[in-house]
Image 1 (cartoon, helix red, strand yellow):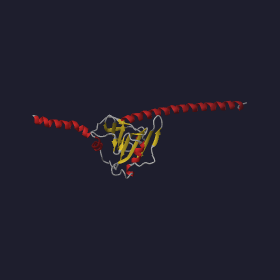
Image 2 (cartoon, rainbow, N blue to C red; image 1 turned 90 degrees about the vertical axis):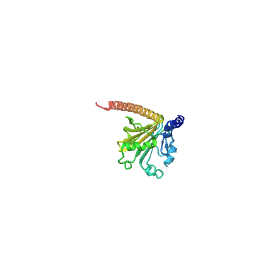
Image 3 (tube, rainbow, N blue to C red; image 1 turned 180 degrees about the horizontal axis):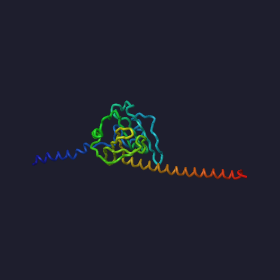
Image 4 (tube, rainbow, N blue to C red; image 1 turned 60 degrees about the horizontal axis):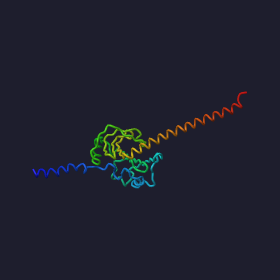
Length: 224
């Protein structure tokens, strides 16, 4: 009995500690970490000077940066299955990474094949019934169905299949920064709508003023 108890206790400790051993860092994709700065990332992908695209300035700065790993010898060995990596920044912090896989590299692979491959890095996924949106990416204007998801309280990684480019893609983001970015984008669109309304009001006022000026002028010279 004593021997069984002494064997059972270490075995229980191993089982309890197993999830901790298997825990994965969902904030990282290869050499990139969510939350890293734009200059840090740019130096890693050798994009100097900075080639980020400015999406909006107010109420927060949203920037985007795209790289094609196959065009960089530094990443050719480890990213030969990747066609494009798309980075999004909120006030200079990386909040979203969109990885689009090369069609030839994934040709013939099923969704289940992709799930199993990604699970070796990030652990066991869930299979949610839902979609994910891409508010600032030109290749992903519509929402895409989530095939599998790996997440914790801070980060989310989602496998999708893009209908536009007909390829698998991996979307990962910081929940905190993504929520702040989404709110800033929505507010920016609202402000743009208000500005458009004010511009339209000014245009209508100018049009009415020009019409009245022409009316007054023609009243003096027209029709004896």
